[in-house]
Length: 80
Figure (cartoon, rainbow, N blue to C red):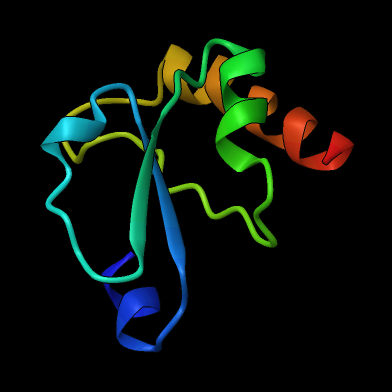
């Protein structure tokens, strides 16, 4: 996200709690939940590219966020 902003791109950040994202120029936030495809559809509306940074922390194996959330993101992106 920071690199995209540095390069001058408009960025939309999705988060369950968008209020925790530090505001920045050219950055907008939208509330979304990767387990809810309809909320993800709203998040990616009017965007050109979707980049997911979802992944396990170094201490944990992949879980439901990846096994269920990523397929939702992909399906919504394909429909968009």
